[in-house]
Image (cartoon, rainbow, N blue to C red; front, side, top):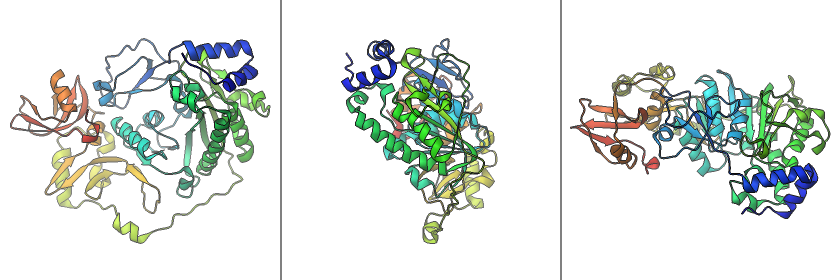
Length: 461
């Protein structure tokens, strides 16, 4: 049985009135969490084995239901498990192909993968996460999703401001918060909760948003979201943000009456706060969520020109270089065997080499002083007189119908995920894509009727 903190109960009885507050408490204590998933429109095969009859309102390719991390749909990056309410911030940002978009607090990657789908490989997604361990998960999820145009960074928001001054068309800040909206699915959120913690979160949110605004283009869009009910982290934050930086609070049209409006009387009574959205548990969409959409003025009062100082010594040591003719030949011997999606068609002119890693960059990072985990699409690794394709390449190739594919049985599927070599009956030789139920899982290499396993060690079960 969930035990809510006494201060939390008193707070929401005062804000909502006893009857409405009791409905919220009942939803927290007695109703199970809502679970959902999205189907990846970037993949060629979208025919999943799950029930697709129960649609999540508004969100395309999104359904209620539970998926398993052991299923081929997940392993192949064809589905992403995500709280239904948490799908809305990235939907609201409505990124367009060609735009530059920043997901500032991006891990584990649900919102970044959705933004990447909207961009369709055109433009730039910068996905940043301050925690190294969470940033690793973010990278894995974006690679699994088959994203080609992401720059994944692991840095503090304030460290990004001088590197990307007035750079982004759109920025999503899904801010760290007190997590009140997660109480029924996360006991730890209840244990952490206190009013003092709420105010500490507010202070941190202001710091993150100050950095975000500095990176937003004039007339750019900022979407702010939390998974808490707290007015201090929601309406009060938006009120502070709109006043300090003169951002306009934009209306959000979703076409559903299940989502409530923000409460101006919980902040400074600014009527525009009613343009924000609140996802209460009683609406039965998903867990608790708050979303606001804001626009920067055409001529922001705060000047932010920024500069990037060159560090020539560092640049020489970590230089990205173009492949020579011999290296191109080695890479082509592998890539030319596969049906390349549009993002890879110009790889000969676009790819670079860094520490023997061959990649197509999403962004020129010359003079960029941030911690970068990945930039664009890693094609693979150059070794002595050979080229070994990388796992991300397999995930990107899944955007197109392929012919060099080994389809696994149920037993060999588990063996592949464990990293084992597999006996196969095929005329194919060399590097092949490995699939199960037509979901591409990664690479293998066939020699003498044996499939050598190239599934990454860090992903193996």
